[in-house]
Image (tube, rainbow, N blue to C red):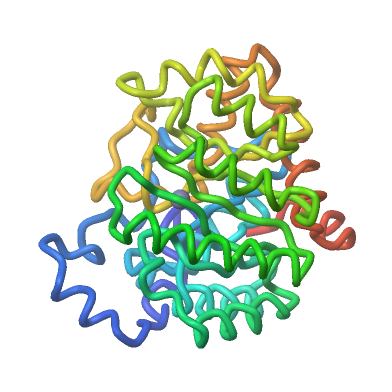
Length: 323
Ligand SMILES: [Zn+2]
């Protein structure tokens, strides 16, 4: 249907190309811009019964450069009304802030991902501190520890993380945390800082029960992605999902990564996007044994309080947008 948010948007061809995109394109084996469809198949169009907040959307990823307006229109049509754009380094955080300034319902985080921790220095710390003072930035991160791949050494990761814990205390803003295979060290470091931190969410939680309860004991929030929709590796999460208090639970796509594996239709290019968040919420509600509406409402209330999103925006978001 022409003009439908599910199909090609009028702004589609006018979407600005970001500088540097050419370089990123030539360095990838598969062209990220040409390998996905520009619409969602009918079977994947699902509208959440209540407005949702996607707390982790990497919309500054090169794969969204061509059709960002259409992606945002499809999110609104799916009742995903608020997006927290993940800022994983200085460049992406600045891009996220710029988008949040320009477009309603978008907010940004600003941090340095553990993969890039080796780049941490005094200049980067100053730049991050400056970003955290911006009103569009609602959390410090993505930061944390990833001992799974160690793109930066564990020592470099701890140094960058420690500095960002300090920045979170300084700004008073909540933390957006990444942790993989580093649960014990993460808990130790957070324990030392916890009294001075306001709030923190472990995004894309995929660890075991002991780690989960360690985080809950530290009064942390938990972000769940489509990981538990994966029949190969998400089984343990299905059993744990009921152990997370609703007031601690938030939902996210982590798009373009982690396309859920339980979707009823294939997506060319396998790029995940915010419009697919209702499928994840439905799955979490199922394994928790509650209604999708209840989970949607609870996670949105939790996310709005956690990121301190303005109340008038809530009013606005409650109205489904005309397309
Ligand atoms: Zn992450």
